[in-house]
Length: 189
Image (tube, rainbow, N blue to C red):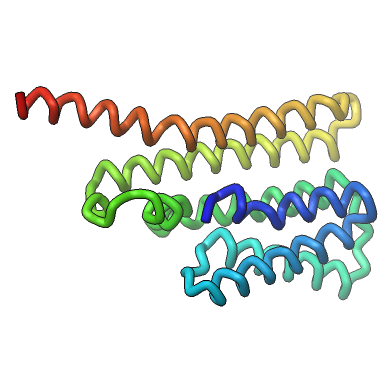
């Protein structure tokens, strides 16, 4: 399973929030998270911290909205969701279990899992995702609380941060492999 698939509940949230309403987005994000978790369990895969965190986040925000009749603005609900996403990533780093570890383990031979380089690479990639989500939170807060800033700045910052994290996730592991393969090749020759 890829990180992007695990982030699909957030895409459902965003689409429904924009097309229908913030509460529809939260409910859709919860439903997509629940279906993703159930499908992973059905297939015998482990449910990862990102999926569990997303499920809890959308359940909590949807329940809170329903109980308190909160009237969300688009920017404020995005700020809440993106802050939750940032919290998931930061908690994973704080407890020493970068959220990217289980995804990397699906693609890397088990013999490398205990390597300090493997762990460090995942910590760096998770931190880059954390930075991207921090940019989203800052852009959302700016859109909500600084009306003089045009909305397109929020959109551009969010897209650039997300695209940058995706790009880094794809490029960095290969750069690490090349960097550590070169000295090993030199020793064997």
